[in-house]
Image (cartoon, rainbow, N blue to C red):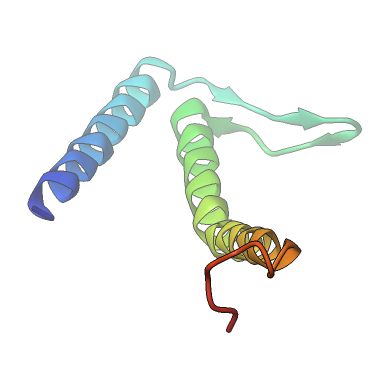
Amino acid sequence: MKTIPLLAISFLVAILASAIGIISVQNAAPVSLNFIFFQSIQLPVGVVLAMSISAGLIGGALLQPLWNLSDSQNSRRKFQANPEESDTVQY
């Protein structure tokens, strides 16, 4: 049953790569990003999109353990709030 999620992820990555390829071919003109007073060098739109998506995927992958850690701490607090009302065993 693990093959279906892996196949879906493969399709999403293929569609994303195709979309970046099509957009980069259609928009070959260089652009520069402006943020407050900072301006980047001029890069093609496809390169900017690829870097943005890569940064988002890497950032999400790095922050995922922190979200799981905070979720587990919140669930522990729920169990420890009223130990005499609960049938669970505290660890």
